[in-house]
Figure (cartoon, rainbow, N blue to C red):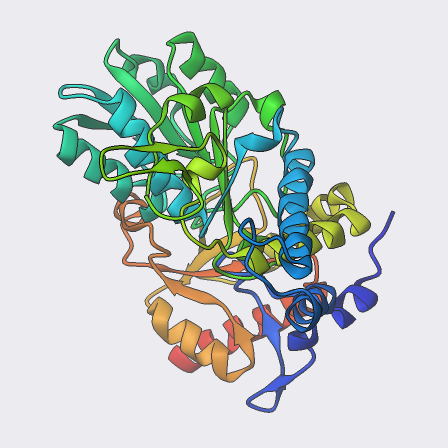
Length: 406
């Protein structure tokens, strides 16, 4: 099935505008995706007709809102093929999900002298929480290196595991290089060493079909705003056995069983990890976004984005003195590049005046930039509403930048 790109683009009103008098070309999807009208309408309708706090009320709107919220939990369970509905925890986003695990798993399982493994290509949100845990527990952080092409050095992973290794946390897709890591193989290696695995799925959930049971990951984190839903909503999938043993991350309303000044007891998962009023409207938007993607077809999206990535890579590589950073054999729709002797900020600012939105800087992956020996890159990240014409305009813009500085 080929995608009807014109119809899809019409679903995203923000794309149909001009910036500085130019047609808007949005190539910053790695940072956040735009929202289809279908999601916008669902959110608007909910606020107009169904808004009420959940789980607490016996009145009609509260019951309807609760049913809608919990219906999304069930939808996500199906979407990522989790075994149990209560293995789906709503959070604020990927960062919040990782912090939850780093704190709660860390409190239960990590002690002085233990070890945590991450990779050198992680987003700061999958580095800093583990550093904080290691500092708190006097544990050790170990790092899987990657080579100049942006591929993990898998032959060095086994040697990192010891009897003191408590968890491995790793990104599915590099947000700065586009590398698709061999997650299933990494999980298998970790489990052979009796080490659970957390997957940062912020850059994979919108591009790949995710089956957490097939992957056999122990934790999987992602954000709604990366998958065409609102900001401020995210998901943590966690295997039931860990949720039962991990202590709560935060305390407050809606996560308690019985409260007294002598002792408080907690509800079971998922509610134990959802203190306070949740972003229930964000959850509604996430359910709508999932419906939208399923209607188009995840396989169709993946095939189209792969073709677009190939086209963009060939076009950009044809430009003299342009270097692409991240040339792994398996990549997602992300291209990071530099034009020789031209600062990434300058490139990004000039492209912006041409109506082309890209991301510049370190992309919250400063250790990656250190390995690549650069201060930052220009990143073009694609979605299924982007076109070859968008790529052509990007190439024209890059050539213009190059000419200006020549």
